[in-house]
Image (cartoon, rainbow, N blue to C red):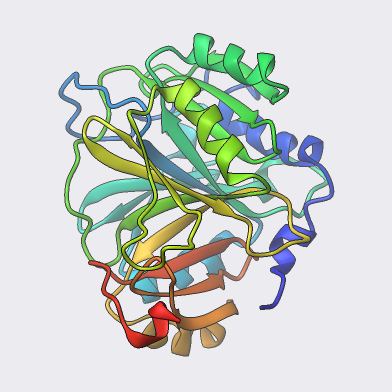
Length: 309
């Protein structure tokens, strides 16, 4: 496998923090990020990954990339929420549903070229969850901050160094639903010690399950963290030995090869070609024009002779 350049370029989380200041609301006291769902019903689902923000230095190229590959649409809202120009922040929708946001890193006036997808995990009490990270040798990059309609958010790294946001929404989390083709399907932590990481996150979000999907490969040390009776995230050993731990998001696709065939013509890169996963199904790993990495995955999972090897 080729080690993704987008991770090798992360020289320090201090640099990345300069970009996350915008998301966390430290850039201005008037920030009012929009809610993560249009249909909040007051229900909260701690442990669920409920939002994905793309930090990008190539917003126009990245927008075209995701529009062409997945049919996403982008709604610029920056100046409506105290985020600088109208193009600073955009909401991402798929078939009309909110699925994430995009930050134009060029508008932050920072000396940084980092681009990355950042996940936000729902927590019942962001202040308490942040203290778990602090007490366990994680790092609190941005302390809990109120973002009005979005809720209360903190930016942290876990004890092994993986970056994420913790979000206590104001009016409720997005409801569970079957991901459509082109939706975010799954989120996975690639880390140095899967056993230790899964134990740590069970403390953060009170996950009720820690199940390894061994029906596909009995030797696979893959943890599935569950809450509310549903699987929420996976934890596995980092497949790139020299790359820092990272949360990786997956997009549901019918045929990874059909997507990768178009990636380079749209300015992106292919890091891992379409292949059968040991955990089931087929997957690929790509990067958008800014270098932000994202995975592709078929669903539901199926076995094959290749996965059994």
